[in-house]
Length: 213
Image (tube, rainbow, N blue to C red; front, side, top):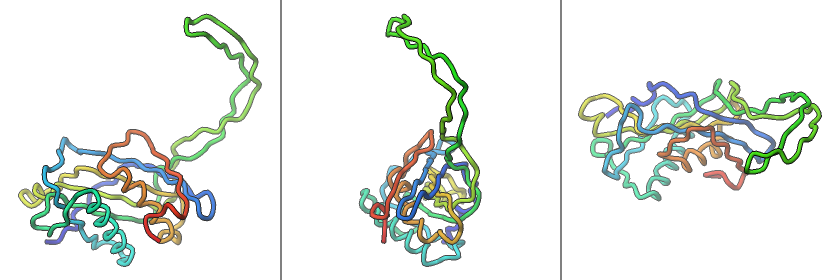
């Protein structure tokens, strides 16, 4: 069975941030569960699909094996494509992604009022104009990793994909950084596997936190 079907699914606008310095990565992640009302299957068998569209077959193989290792640790049993309850596929690449960035915002001078729990004014103080740095969504060229899971039995019976979960992590970097950053991208993808995240989750990672060396 040729299971490159997931790749045609549209990517969600999921979030990412950038490298700070050598050995440190600030990765953001967002995930979405049960698309179109789909419910997870009751079974615990899974087939990690080979992504035939990935040109870097070595990286694709490494990620696929790490996914299998992770799922085994979570109590799943690896099964053939024609019997599994769940399909899981990873895809990766480079390009523009919505990322969580830092933007300077100038705040005008103001008088701040402090109140007690009863609403009574306890103090007023003058705050001069200042620069504040806020996290805002930005579109930047990034390295990204997406993990998808789908109802395998539903696909075999209907020929249609019903995604149960998808999550994407990324870091602001050029395409030449793809092999070096993938170990960091896979950490939040595993940590939040199967979970929905309404907001961007930022994960700070260092070399020793990477999923593989």
